[in-house]
Length: 146
View 1 (tube, rainbow, N blue to C red):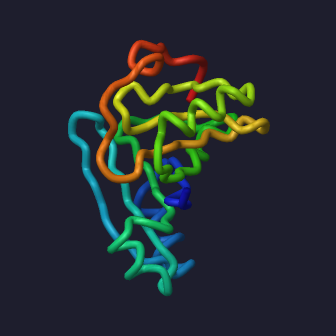
View 2 (cartoon, helix red, strand yellow; view 1 turned 135 degrees about the vertical axis):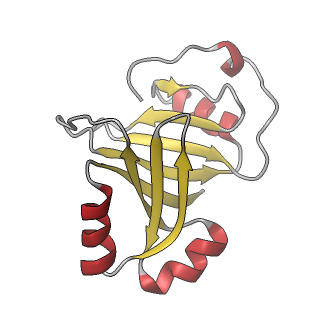
């Protein structure tokens, strides 16, 4: 397993970039605009991690800017921690066996979400290519908020 990124939702992308980039000194490593989903993702890294982040897409801070206005109360502005795992199905199986609810099962062989005991959202991403769909995950519905 390796740490990938921490996601934070932001209300004003320019103000947030001014803070994280211009004042704190993080470096923008990549950006993605999603017209269909109406959001922008901006990834930042510490200067000493910038080359590694560009090459390996980690370690980073992901700023998520939703184009439609929304109030992020109740901690919703903190998004999730993301980890890359060797086998997303095996990771979810181990977590489920330990009593962890799989909030967003890895139906696509690529991504799953679980919650920590403190209700922190954790994203698990399959290393390399996505796995072929497999049961019980392929037909498992989402559970709760992820």
